[in-house]
Image (cartoon, rainbow, N blue to C red; front, side):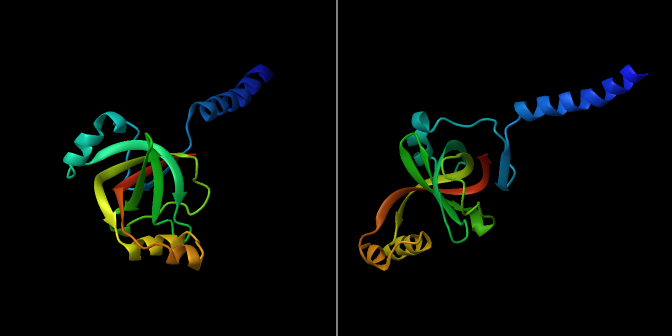
Length: 154
């Protein structure tokens, strides 16, 4: 009887411990997406930009997030930096602690010209000095991504 009770006491701990090491800690934001069918950005970049009305799912490293609200993030995907905004401001990502983590984003990609006013707003959100903000004088051509769902791998 003592053996049986030890067995039932020890087994749940072994199972729990095993699962803990085999799972990735994921945080979901916006529309629920999964880790299946992540597309290769480097191989498909031109197709993605030509078919801008088709939703894509790609993965990259988070470089920064909006420190005010978490309303945007910059990620690096195969040496390209994408400015990621969130559909209808329907969700936000953590303001701090996401840099260097991997993110899977689902949504629409486009080439975008960001106005001087918007660039200054982003610089203000990022805590740049008034001098740095005043030095922003030209719009910027960038790759933008409008995400409807995000997964951050913790």
